[in-house]
Amino acid sequence: MELNGVEIEDTYCEAFGGFFARVLVTAINENWAKIAGLIATGYGTSTIHCDAEAAIDVMVPANQTPDNRPGAALMFFISDKKKVGNVVMNRLGQCVLTCPTTACFDAMKGSLDPEKIFDIKIGENLRYFGDGFEEKDGNIWNIPVMDGIFKCQDMMKVGKGIAGGNFLIIGKDQASTLKAAEASIDAIKDLEDAIAAFPGGIARSGSKVGSKYSFLGASTNDAYCPALREKSENTALKEGDNCVYEVILDGATEDALKMAMKLGVEAAVKVSGVNRISAGNYGGKLGKFQYHLKDVLGL
Image (cartoon, rainbow, N blue to C red; front, side, top):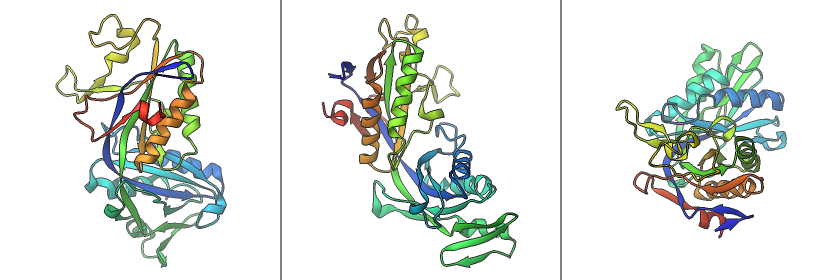
């Protein structure tokens, strides 16, 4: 199969179920909303070691927010249902409550299983920072801080989503492959309900399950490391494959995840120097969700 002259391998990505919250942070201007969003979602690339996979979903214009100020919609994906409340509350408390001019609102739009959406206490817990001076207005807690009032919704929703959707961009060199990966992320950035949590949305260190070291649950994906093409018996690289980047995606729904994959791949194959597109899976043994590239792309 080919798309724009680039080979699309007949394979699939394997993804997993997870829980997520979608939070809207607003501020006096877009710059401060983005700062709060970036800090709150930091150290949120992979649940292998981070407490969440997190990133800014989309920037939201002032005419679409509850307080008529520009905002950033953030998404936090957590594998353990019992930890969602504390993870989200801690990140918002440490990174948004502390950030100049911000406010926080629930921003749940869609979920894989709407009937299983549940609430977590956010403003309801953060209000105690007000030391008794906090006041409630409807479902919003007004917490006094040194630049005015921090407004935070009392309860926020958690839904069931999908984590670990992905595709691999295999190219002739680092420069062209990175350019293709950047084009993928740019194509996805305005799509709601889907995030790419790795730095700039791009992972250079794709992993496989397990390791020769017993204390590691994941290790470098030697099949796609160009430096190991002549050393690894598992290599999936051909002559001329000198760089691989992985775009790893989380989505609130299957439609959002598949659309992110589609937009990303379609953008990547327009860049000269891309040899082929593939995807990462574990033989269908670990992830409930499997998305074949040919189906996602309509080939």
